Image (cartoon, rainbow, N blue to C red; front, side):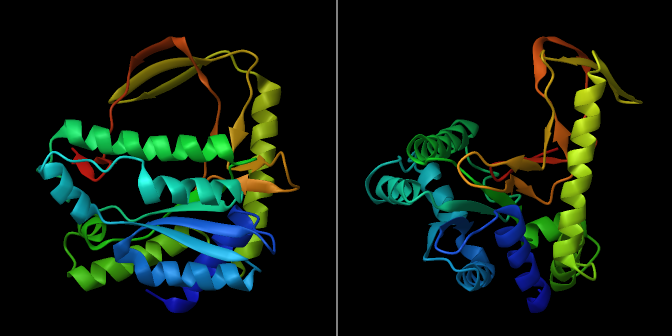
Length: 272
């Protein structure tokens, strides 16, 4: 991991994606394996004037042991108190994903669903208490992810190569990352404006393995990477990296089939 680029990545997330303001609190959710990057995030948050930085540490390996023995830690006790504490402070919340693609291979799917339900409960409780939820989800390379993307490389080389790929996707590998994000945000707003003006009635997605017709609900409203905040001036970028603009499909006006041509990951389980 290139430390200079890692700090630029953290700065982009805090200042551009989260629109972080002096005096705010930062609340991070991250796997224990990415401690070094979390320290970088904390450094950049304090540089931006953070009054407090909290971290909810997650251990997928420990969760695996619990689930293999029929246990899923509920949303209660210290964990619930922590969620409520940071929600009431309207903390900027950042979830740092570092996928381990195989850690839950031998865990029953029902247990994984229960674990995901507890995580959803925590986020719902946070949304209930905070004046406005803003923050984002970001990705940090892991050895198993790097091995899946670059199977022909030694582990260390694959991990460094994946870091460089992530830096490219988050626009850190540009002469001025902050300016690059400003340009991206302006372009995203233009795309949203065009789509809202067009008001297309139906969308057809097709390829050799996909043939899908989809209509959106009416009135059709498109959103995108940069969502304007309600309680403070500015915007929030929900995912980093992101390129999407989106609208809500009509649940009764979708017809056809779609095929994923690449593996998918759901809560630590690889779907091929």
